[in-house]
Image (cartoon, rainbow, N blue to C red; front, side):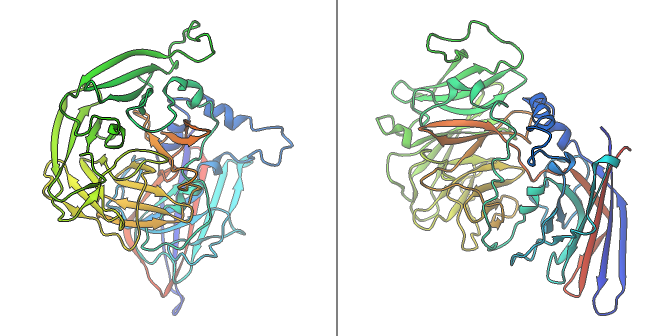
Length: 481
């Protein structure tokens, strides 16, 4: 289905009454289309078309507003076609359909509940947002629609506490590539040394999910390739107790001499992680000690996802202070020991100060500007940002700016319930698999990264919203070209 979008922005000077108007048609990205294609996409459609009886009050009457209605304002043009804003783009303002902002958040504006008109019968939705003089002040060069919850992903210093919104677990149904297809990959804990290893990625093109298992005693990294049954289905794949027998083959990679801890505690001092954007996965090895003393080293082995070609890096702790020693995933995935975007991230005990070590030049260590916040667990990593979802806020590490920011995307994670993380689905950045601990095992479900760019409208010229102006944005989506 084709969509057409149009934006009208009105800036009104509260002292003179002068009104500045900018209007422009926009680009509709492939984001929402991508949700209904690829891995499990046909089931997404089924979930949308049937959601209970027709008299069920919770059945959505307007499918468009399930995927559009959040507003994101950026301080630079984004160009056309991208699914997420680059980390260099700052967020000047946000707004959420059908919600008036009654919080202390001065980045987010409000929906105009009277003038917003959702009219699926005639194929047109008109979203109207308003910003007071103290809201969304700064430069605006791109205006984008996103998922409604995507509007909670601003990047502020010391964002006000917010209510839990479950933005990290917007899912369709558990059958969409979750436990049912990955039974043989689901471990009872996150340790890479346990029997089933750790789910690293799913690959719809190869019809497989890949789990990594570290055999520390024998110096072997096993890549276990399990069939997803998307393209082929074996009628004889159940065993005698009813589990799916999905293992196709196991690749055994030699890691003899690489691990710095090979005893019973090896699972605490090694880590597997995947950076799908770079096409790489990593084995991280720490010395067996509660802290990484100044001068000691971390060993990182980088593998190409497709060819398995590897490169070794030695990262010295040249921060002058002791860093956290363990990198194990217990009730959550720690940021400590994560490799993303070509850098290793390590944290200090107690303060949780974050240090970034570029693998290409590990002596060029950068201390992240924390702004009094912390990012203990890794909830997700994509488009140049790393996320941790706490119960009162979401903390964002912007890798372009090397700073921590926070936003309103609070989620129900805790040290007792656990912190979920994601495993990527190759080629489908919008819909990763969420890995979470529940009922004494690690489970998975296919989720949506909600701060996608559903539309992009790069303005013909930069606007500046100041404290002497109010702003009104009218964003129209209609069926057709």
